[in-house]
Amino acid sequence: MKKKLMMLVVTVMSMWLMACSMESPVDNGDRADGDSDELVVGFSISTLNNPFFVTLQEGAEAKADELGIELITVDAQDDDAKQVNDVEDLIQRGVDIILINPTDSSSVVSAVESSNAANIPVITVDRGSDGGEITAHIASDNVAGGEMAAELLVELVGEGAQVAELEGLPGSSAARERGEGFNNVAADELDVVTAQSANFNRAEGLSVMENILQSNPDIVGVFAHNDEMALGALEAAVAAGRDDLVIVGFDATDDAVAEVNAGRLAGTVAQQPILIGEEAIEAAMSLFNGEDIEEFIPVELDLIRD
Image 1 (tube, rainbow, N blue to C red):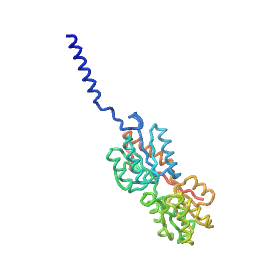
Image 2: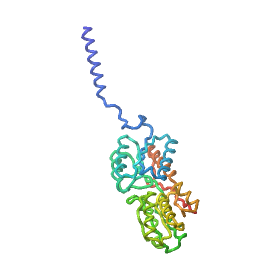
Image 3: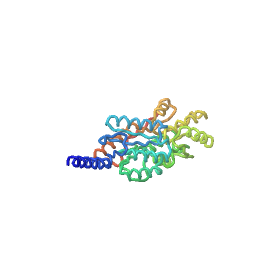
Image 4: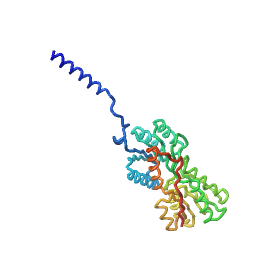
């Protein structure tokens, strides 16, 4: 009898252990850590080869450290396909919220929609998305900034003067909006003889500006959609002996501000990238805490001039 009882106990215990082993483990969504109470934010940045976005990242990281948020940053290296893959990876890692600074406002839509399908809120930073569900957008008013740059050029070179426009990445909201603002003023006040893309890149700004100066020797001013292109244009102007060329940039990077202070750049529109990064993290925290946030969170602009 005792032997039969013992065998029964062993059988019941074995069945219980087997049942336990078949239960699914707790799913933390492959998060970077196992603490489900900590906010984990993924941040896809268009490129960290641009000082503006490096500063933006630094602002986000500092605020994340202050608020106890885990921030996972990935660099798309200005590659549309890589950014989509990066966001897919963040989704697989189970982040709570995704911040995206798009390489291109159109190509990023598929990444936004993947995040939407995974029920992960998306906040766009500096550049917007042409589609998908965006919880909030944090940026300066690029249209207003373009208008500020045009007004400065009009003041410095005079109405009707011939100028050139160096455009940013085609398809990016920043390029569209800065160009729109610039031409809101320039269409009536200046003679924009050429507008060419240099993809927000300093080396391309140099080469494009060299060609513009050869084909349009009478231009007296330039508006570049960002400081990297403005600095490239400045190199081309100096090499061509055009120290008189009035160049206005956008972003107020350290290099550009130094050139403004030296009297070589006429001005730059300050976007305050540190503040943009901080605002993005604060918005993510508010969202995580169930608070309502604005669909558009503007960051104030400033004009830095010689």
